[in-house]
Amino acid sequence: MLLFFVFVLSIFLGFELITKVPSQLHTPLMSGSNAISGITIVGALVAAGHTDNSGFATALGVLAVALAMVNVVGGYLVTDRMLRMFKVRRKEK
Amino acid sequence: MHNSDLINFGYIIASVLFIYGLKLLSAQASARRGNLISAVGMLLAVVLTLCQQGLEYHWIIVGLVVGTAVGAVLAMRVQMTSMPEMVALFNGFGGLASLFVAWAEYDFKPEMPASSAAPAMLAILIGGITFTGSMVAFGKLSEMLSGKPVLFRGQVPLNAFLLVVAVVAGAIFTLSPASTYYLLILTVLLGLALGVLLTIPIGGADMPVVISLLNSYSGLAACAAGFVIGNTVLIVAGALVGASGIILTSIMCKAMNRSLTNVLFGGVGAGPGGEGTTLQGEPKPISAGDTYFLLEAARSVIVVPGYGMAVAQAQHVVKELAELLEQNGADVKFAIHAVAGRMPGHMNVLLAEADVPYEQLVETEDVNPLMPSVDIALVIGANDVVNPAAREDKSSPLYGMPIINVDQARTVIVMKRSMKAGFAGVDNPLFVAPNARMLFGDAKQTLQAIVGEFKSAAA
Image 1 (cartoon, each protein chain N blue to C red):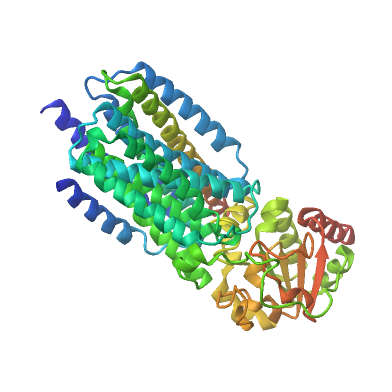
Image 2: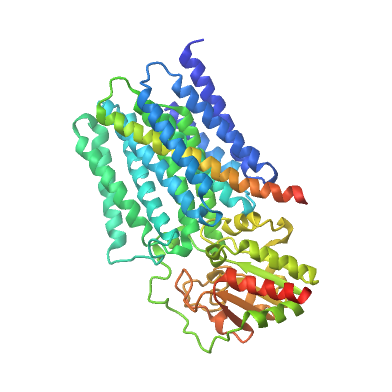
């Protein structure tokens, strides 16, 4: 129940945080938040790391670790690449 | 303090970093710092999880290394023009990871309480939908699949039926998870099938909406996985992404003046060449040389970029042309439609890559009042977002979408590869308008020819 409470509050917080976004930030915001959804890496690490896991569960867990890591690393890096371009332009002004 | 208390305290800090990072990400000046802060939060969460006692490391390390390497290589090598499909791909991987987490947790301990079993089914279903949905979006965006909506009889009832089966399976599973492994497998298959079925009827032009929505799903899948393992940082971060994805989705829908239901089930452009208007009149072609003379004489020019600019990688030469026009004494602006391109803000990213100053970009509602006084509107590979049928023709599938009124400029030059209808598959009466000239060819080569004319005239 406590977890559910945390969930509901976080949804509301999410709505409140990002109501007004300038359109030039739509792509970086999307890919940046996409990187955050890679938080499932935490679950993947737990699932892959149980010491008395079956081989099958370990395989699923390790696949999940790799996939989530692609999501996390790739997501943050492309977002930074995009935002860097916005930055360079401002300096020139 | 106990070790696990310390770890939980660290998770709170990670959650705060995500929240703060996301907040900074939604403002121009702080966006890059915001992304960095959220990345630090992620690193913290990963390190803390690895500090948990009793984890078996060697396979984990293999997964971490492989995932990091693949992600880094993809992110560094992708071209800015291919960004939409890359985001779709990453998103799909995140969804599949959440599916695997829930499945592995069940396989590890099938005697789950209902409070873990129900979210496990949700993580599997939403994760599966996210994965195959993102793969279909990836295929459509990279043009490996046709951008046309795929519709067949009974599509909506079939989807509804599959969803009902998933809900029933989930309910039975929740009551007795240990003895119903087959229901979990069934839900995996249902999720994967639904992802495809829900995404194929959506046309290529509506992809910005779909990507935003799938982004939201991947957050919710992570959130559900968080309930399975009872981890708050997953729930907080997943819910934040879920909410932000929904907000972006609604921004995109508003830009097209359509409801989400219409986007998801409307199948715009499914008809052969689109219903509605039949074009009356002949398009009037123009050469690059003649375009140069028109542009040379123009005092105000509005450039309207679209997906065609992205495909031709023409953003740099567009910027070069804009500079030459300004040196020539013309006022140059770029009109950006919110759904131009294939992802939210696609054109902004490309023009930023080419170093176009932010002040030169204007949005639809600000540019339209100026349009009648504009000498030349230069449309570069945009189609549906400048289709006057959206304003005038009630039978057009695009009717009601706010467009950039380039047809009201004194002269419109439309750069296009051919007379083919746009991504939405709807004919565009703009192409045969009396004040419109068609400049056929690859946008980059044609623009280079015009730039060449300017330079040789200056020399």
